Length: 328
Image (tube, rainbow, N blue to C red; front, side, top):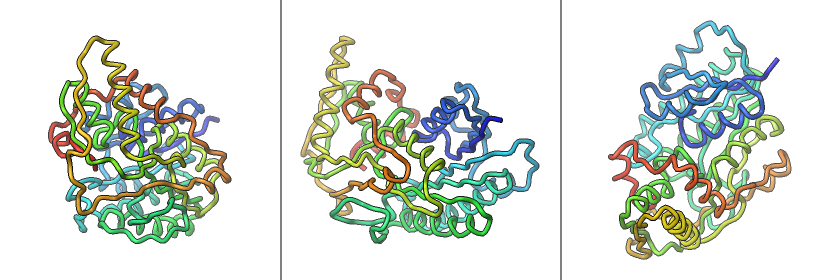
């Protein structure tokens, strides 16, 4: 009997990559996606994926339905209000906590014995050393506070139900099917021959390609310790300026091959914001020890893959593009 996985928030960058990883491993996938989103089309194209459109507020109702199939692993990626002012919409973020607990109920009702919840580096707040599972958490936004609480409360709920619980705090991920991240938006503009402004790029960052992120989630589900929290990153950090240099060279090379003009980049044209995070890197020692995970796709290769795929060149939401033109 083949194994089955449920993925909420499946139409996002990590969600699509995770669905692909599960399919490659021979698993059936139920992808639960935001109702009416155009991004859901990417999942309809994947063989072995059943798409269910349902918003976060519908999980409680879904937990009361009779499911003909039984599932093994529940990956909870869905979350509302991940960017902009919504990150400090406390009522909205509190709803996310409730919906995470509804997701645990749904997982239990569907027969899942493993629950992997996706948290965020925002749970930690500001630190000047690589983030570890045991690094003290001092979130500064409602988003980070809610993620921290959702992780703790879902762990307790899973424990009561005999479900293996894993919480993963994700740092910076890039890849196909992005939309809000700096890499995607900058790439879209450069491919259109536009100018993109940045800060001086002194921030220390740690980027991970979405395919690697998805593979790590599967490894956590299979081999991760019960009740553990993991940090998910590449484990290698560089200054943002170094990343941008690599990124821009790759875009110029690709555009030259196609006989097209590349946009321009202005480093140092923007001031740092008051809430600018200057250091964001992860220590994945415990994750690697428990699961064997190691990033396989370096940043240079990841950008080349992204350019070859070409799926992120088009803006699906003009308002989103305006909001995330520059660094998050």
